[in-house]
Length: 116
Image: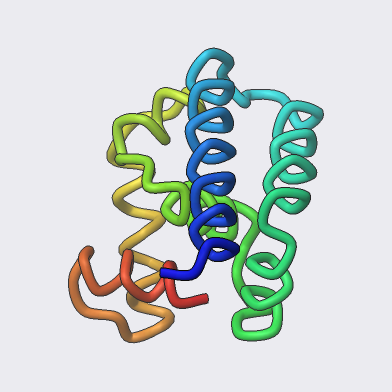
């Protein structure tokens, strides 16, 4: 692997670890905190949100947030802990999204999110 992509991959990995650590520390329960998360996420992954909006402008804010957390590799339990909601809420939201996008299976959904 060439050096530049390897360095970029390492930097992204460190950013994801840092971001996961920060969001696990604090529940993102207020609108201000969610807005701050979105800004940090968009600064770190500027193309993700743009591509998501281009492909799926009909998604709700909760569904878009699920895409972001899934992209970061968080589990349902981690997402529910961060948002202060029941794990079933995360499962139901993902099920609705998968139905909207005609995606079969959680692994297919995760793969789809990573391709955006």
